[in-house]
Image (tube, rainbow, N blue to C red; front, side, top):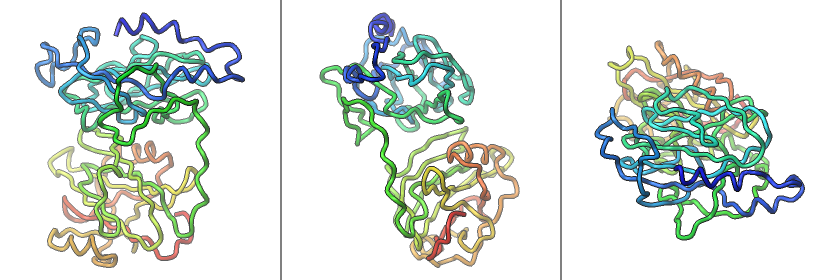
Length: 370
């Protein structure tokens, strides 16, 4: 790491007139470079995972990543994702980083911003100047780097909430012979300046959601749409908080569709509290639907022997209404608000069993947002 930091000042100053002439940005490539390192001799178990990154040694392999929204590395290896953060305007920037038991560290411009195991929910604010600034996200062994990954969020001076850093704000100097991340099957190298994101097409008739935010305690086992199980690629975990989870699900939901969520919780953990809530996002300004208790659109199945029919047939079991949770997880609504980007107006719902199936049947005619 030290050898990297000594070289960085040569590239950090944005040229004069950069606002008008952005050819300078083509010296960089979108994304960051990840280097993986072998387990250090001092890293004996989960309680002894930290060593100073400067002692990692020589990298075993290198690859690029496009996003830091849950970036991944081999669990039994240390890793450093490094490059440059493009700071759009000078001012105060807030950062938060989290992973399994928060076994990670964040450095901005060579300074530690988020410390190893500092709680995972602490926000650190630093003053940054406009232009390129070095960034290093460091993962350690025993951090479930290959499954959960490391989530890094920021808040610019113009943002109201913390959000994942967009790929168009991450850059590195290209190197020969480096492949894209084995954890990102669709990753592609891009060597052009960032362009504005195109506005989505007008909402097609009957479309009620383009994506879902789901918060559950303890977790969602499987998700089905119209009787078909969703693939792992369609589900992305954004939070693992001591077993409770939040995830984003990328699917289009239309009038007449039905969704089924298989959820479970352990009654012996955390005084038996549990949580399940859903927000369906239609666009950046509109919610398509939310989970509702005692609604004809939301039903449950508590018997495994009846679950197959409940999943595969739209109207099967819909007479059993989803009910509100008597002892909901106290942080559930907070994380629903955070990851959905809206003040959650729905209900935390469940059935009568620790493991249950929850169904949402989209009305054939959708009157508007709920």
